[in-house]
Amino acid sequence: MHKIFAAFLFLSYISISNSANILAIYTLASPSIRLWNTPLLTALATRGHNVTVISPEAQKNRVANLTDLPVDGLYEAIGGDMDFDVLHEATMFFWIKEMFAFFRKGCLFTLKSDSFKRLMEYPTDFKFDLVLMEPIGVECMFGILPRFGNPPIVTVASFPAPQWVLESTGTPSNPSYVPYSFSPYDDDMKFMERVYNFIAYIYTQYLYKYDYLPKMDREARNVFGPEIASVESTAQNVSFALTNHHPTLDTPFASAPNLIPIAAIQVKDPKPLPTDLQKFLDDATEGAIYMSFGTNVRSDKLSLAKRKAILEAFAELPQRVLWKFESDLPDAPKNVKISKWLPQNDVLAHPNLKVFITHAGLHSTHETIIRGVPIVGVPFVIDQHMNIRKMQKLGRGLLLEYKDLTKDTLLHTLREIIGNPSYRENIMKLSARFQDNPTSPLESAVFWTEYALRHKGAQHLQSAARNLNFIQYFLLDVIAFLLAVPISFVLAIYILCCRRKSTQKGKDKLN
Ligand SMILES: *[C@@H]1O[C@H](CO)[C@@H](O)[C@H](O)[C@H]1NC(C)=O
Ligand SMILES: *[C@@H]1O[C@H](CO)[C@@H](O)[C@H](O)[C@H]1NC(C)=O
Ligand SMILES: *[C@@H]1O[C@H](CO)[C@@H](O)[C@H](O)[C@H]1NC(C)=O
Image (cartoon, rainbow, N blue to C red):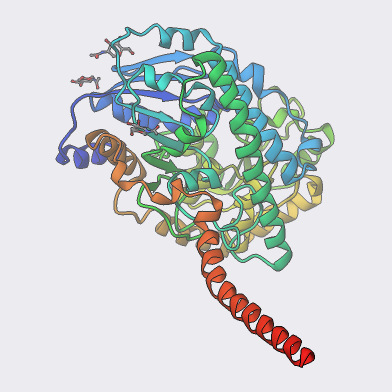
């Protein structure tokens, strides 16, 4: 907790802006998103701002000054069940397409919800001073902005910033060296990887600009009328983009001043564990293993063969195992304890913990880095492949593909990490530099959000790059012009000379 108090102490030195009305919108059907955004929303409410939140669920710990408008049924309607054997086979292109469909469904579901109606019933003179939102899946609602006084927009991305977020701040996202955010690459790309990276980049750009945004634009105009600003222009009019990246872990790239990294904002100082968990881990004299595939991937949906392989491997180990497993597991060996929910942040902090078996989601990866626990990553979707490859490359964990997961491979991987101290040493080094920041991520997020309030959207930090089209941005028009001048000059001379020569020749012939 002391970190959060320190944050408030620090922030109280900065002139506190007057209490503002803030609207926060989240439409993505993933429980981890609201969880990740909670510290910022709570901090803003505690600092006296009047925060209204539209999201799939209400905050568990109620706080004063925060009004939740939960959109019931969104997770069930859009989350859906995923088949692991299909998931791990899917290509990056399949995911890009699915992703945009997923964003669109979340937006439309929220737009038609009762909570959205309640928002529209706010008094007509009620104005918002700022809007916080995910940088995707909200565009169909942009038409509400004029109704609430065209407040500045701060986007908060719970995932690694995709190219349209970078571009909304004028940050270059050159695919020659910036790996596509949902690719498995790092910045050391081989030729064919760069080819693939470029194609993924172009494909995403195409889907976003020519398929996704026009569809959202039509939806928004249907609801709010034809006169609203185009959703594309609003999506580009962003005061700050707070994103879940960190320069020590992600590819270094040139960044605009209004792109603010706030990775690991969700991580709190560890609290004491519930008594049964504390005892289970304290008594693990040979060490303990923690396994969880996060909030979206349910362990009880693994195929029976995989489950059997995992349990047989665990039975042969001297370590104790804590497994986030969502239903009963009668055939679990004695050293395995299961639970539907586990306080991950506090479990990872236990000194007996040797290794974390994870889907390598971004939030879990950041949490394990801070606690210095090496990982075995079994990635399923989107950025998870990239996260575990980064960890493996620098010796902080090992990749185990789901299709390769057998009793023997799991045993081998776990024994390697537990037996070889270099994994722990490497992740401790990363942990130290990951936490070596001038301000905590929460302090940064609060500071820049209030900065946007104090300076009415801070238009002075918006890069002019946002207003250029592709041809202007890459100076193709200027290059064409500069080439055109000497070329026409040469051409003119050529034509003149040839003409003269040919007329000369003609004259010679006549003579
Ligand atoms: C709610 O906001 C008011 C100012 O608008 C502030 O004085 C109060 O401390 C806030 N309440 C809490 C519990 O943070
Ligand atoms: C805070 O916002 C709510 C709507 O979310 C409104 O009903 C309430 O009057 C506001 N409170 C203050 C102190 O402005
Ligand atoms: C851009 O956002 C500002 C608030 O930050 C708003 O005043 C302005 O009208 C917006 N401009 C456009 C073109 O949407």
